[in-house]
Each structure stands twice: as structure tokens, then as C-alpha cells.
Length: 635
Image 1: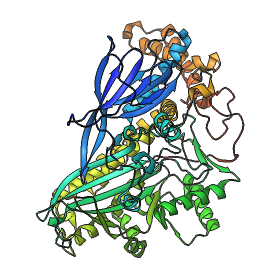
Image 2: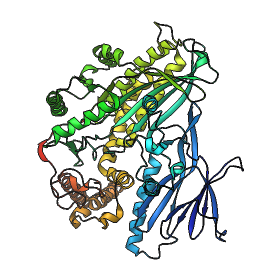
Image 3: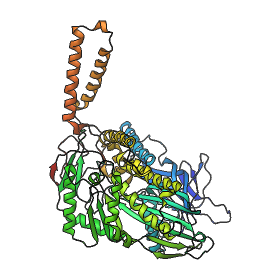
Image 4: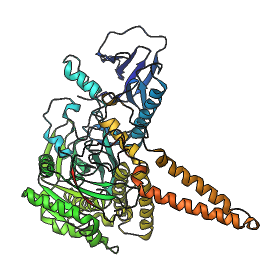
């Protein structure tokens, strides 16, 4: 079953009518009619009269529906970019979208509700504009090649077979999904388009006069999704923050490959998968506008159970786990490593091999080549792990010859910068073996000497690092100079400093809204809560302090630019007063730093903050707290 790839949307004052566009007019079409006043859906409803106010537009899929104060909204794809092709199926990236209100106007809302609605709409737009959304109408984009081979006989529709972890718009599609489940004669599956959020890049490459496609896809889990400091660690269900599944692909026409019988139109596809995710314990770094957030490890009775659930799920999906922990063995990160190691020992699972590699210590003083020590440590395990390989014929038949039997799970504190460096090194090692098997490289040859492909590989992995990092931290990744060039440079270090400063600003003063946008799209129900959460309830003196600082700074600047002959005792006294007031104000703001952090407001955090004024924070502690204040630095 293939999802409709082009639709015509008819809008009038009473209904939305959606029908597929076919090149062949003889094909019997189907349609969906949605009543705007009730939200009622009807498949293949009789054609009504053409309304005088009818508007027609072409769309390329329905992202889904969201219910806010004024009622429902439909989000549709109005433009797309083709990014690649696997077999007979094209893959696309969202380029433009439109949010269409069911309500004809806002006359039924108060002025306060109109403003509240505008806030929610702004959050929705910010999420859709900042994400990297990918989809396909025939290729099941939420799955790896190996999982696809394992569900080959599953006759259910694409949305039912999708990996729900990476089905980013699952909640937005619940209107169509629920209708399909509840009305057996009203199957809307051809209109339900799964979308994943993450990274996808396809590139045609040539080595030794042999052409192939290299692709890299990173799928971000919708569970426990969010921003760097507002989504850390694990939940009771075993989901971890910033979980990404990364798959690299090599696609080659079989006629180019002497190891596979040449069938016209057939392909040989090789795949390798790695994962990353937050350290699977209950922990957080609590913002306070200082450059050093507070690190908290929660002493929670559920830790053992959640930790076990996480790894049981990972083993079911990927097989035995090769766990690489890259955090520092000393200093502020040390307690995290000790707790992780302790939980591994408690679990005592022979299918989990754990290795703590202190990245900063091992690779200090620009000794980045020492990342290869990881390959030496896990060499036999990586050889045994293997990779997926299959021959795919033009008629869709797949013959699998290799399977990947385990996975490398890598983490650092953020699962961004250090993690990406290590994943790219492992990918390089595996890709070399894959290209050798295909006969693209000779048995003892590596692709480092092929400058064009070497640059392509490095840049694709660096782009992947930037996309994953932007989604979580708000900036591009650090250390990408090594990923792009193979060397750690002073220019790269300066760029990292710039990104670190931007991260500080965004993580403290902007990420609350970004987290709210994640929550609104993925799990927050406006009507269930029924209260406006965006009211600033801080006392007046706390709200006024930043304004006082700005005014005093302006006055000080004005006094300093006076002509020199105007300086007298009164001016000097005024300057002294301004400097003293500015100093006191800054000290006050820093001392009350948690009041100036941009906290998320829709979904309570999983821990207490010692500030009663935060309406967004649950007042009932979910965890006992063992607090440790330590130094902090960017990865």
C-alpha cells in the first residue's frame, strides 16, 4: 500500500475535501470530507455542490491535526524537496507547510484567549520551522533496512508497521488513526503519512571508477524529546533523552558488483546502525544563569527498573549492546560515570559490554587520533557484529545475505559532540569493510586516499552532527573541525568557543519556549489542562531588576560620552552611583538566577526547584535528590 503523494484540497466555509491527484483520469478516486464545525470525517462522501467561496490548493501530504483553544487546525505540506531515492521510492524533506484553522474566525474568543491562541500558534510554527522533517510515500522511512527485511511479510498499512519511536507526527495523525481504528469501513491509511525528525542526506559517489550511493540517516525518538537542560536521563518507561538511531547506507546497482548476479534494475544495499542516548539514570543539570549549572543525580527507587527496561528494549530492537561512555572520569562528570558503571554491574547482563573511555583525557592536547583506541578495544566485537547486506530485485524481492547482530550505543553528557566524533570513526571502519566486500576498494585499501569521497564522508557526518546538535542544544556541534578535516585546529576551537557562548544564552534564556514547542506537538493537550500557563507570576522586584540594569547602563553610557570639560565632582558622583547600582543589580540577578531562566511552562519538569513562584514546576517531588554542585564546561 502506497500513500497518496499529491492531493487536492478544497476549502469552503463548511468543509475540507481532500482527494488524491492521479495522472490517469480513469483511476477511481477516493476522497475525505471533514466538516469544519464538528470535525466529523467521512471517507468517500457524495460530492456536494461547489461552494461560491471554495478555494483549491495542491498539497503533498497531511502532517496532522492539533486542537487548540479556538478548535482544530490541520497542518499540510505545501512544498517538498527530493533528497534521495531507495529502489523505486523517493525520499523528501519538508520545505513549506500551512496551518489551516477549522474555525472561520475568532469571534467566540475573548481578547485574552486570542492572545493565548497566538502563543500556541507561534510555538507550533517555531517547531515546524526548526525541525528537519523527512518522509516518503512508499519507503518506510522510520525503519532501518534490517527491520524492513524482518517485517517484509507484514500486510498492514505503512503507518501500522512504522516504528512508533520515530513516527514524529504520530500524535498529530491520531485523528485519522483513531477514525481508521473505530470505523472498519473508513480506512484512511492511504492518507496517513509518517514523518521522522532528524537528518537525511544522499550522495552519489565514485571510487575506482565504480559508482554507488552513500546515505546517512539519523532518526530522533519522539519519546522524552526536548532541549538540552530540560530533557536529561531516563523516564520510568526506560526512554532516554536525545535518543537517535543513525544508519549509513551503501546502495549499488548489482550490475556494478561482480559478487552478485547482475539482474537489470536490481540493487545491492548495505547498512550499518549505531545509537546514541542520554545516560540512562535519573539526573539533571539545573540552570541558574551561572555558567555552571547544578548537576543532580536523583536517588530514585525506580532507577534499577527503568535502567533494565531501557536495555531490554534496546536488545529487542538491536541485539547485544556495546556501550561506550565518553564522559570524564574525574571532576564534575565523575559521579555520572560511577553511577552508570554501578547500574551496569547491578544489571550484570552478559549481552552488555561496557567501556568507559575518557575522551577528553585520552584525546587531550589535540591527540585526536587516539579515538582509534576504541576500535582496538572492540575490534573482535565489531567484526562479529557485522552489518546488513541484501540484494533487492526490481520486483521488490529481497535476498538477505548478512545481518547486523549487535549495536554500538555511545553517549557523553549531551550525546552530541564527543559522541558524533566516535560514531563517525566507527562508521568509517565499517564502511571500509563494506566497500571492500563490494569490490569498490581492494582488500587492503581504504578510502582516505580518495580525496573526493573522503571529503564527502567527512562533511556528511559533520552535517549530521550539526543537525542533531541544533535540535537539542540550539547550536551546531562542537569539534566538527575534526570531523570535517581529520584535524583539531585552533580555528575550530575558537568556533567551538563561539558556539559554547551561544549555547549558554539559548539554554538559559530561550530554551523554555523551545521545550514548550516540543511538548505542544508531542504530548500536551491544551483542553485537558484548561488554564493559561504563560502568565509571569514573579514578584515585581524580580521582574524589574533587568529593566533597572538596562536603565542604569544607559545612564552610565550617557555620562561617559560627555565632553571632557563637563566632568566635575557631581558627574563623578553620578558615575560612582551608577556603577554601584549596576553592581548591586547584577549581584541580585545572579543570586536569584533561577528566576531569570526561561523555564518550560506546559509540562512540569521531573524534579523540584526551590522556587515556589514557578507555575510550570511540579510542587510534588518525584525523586529524592542527592545534589552535587560542580564545575561545568561544554563538550
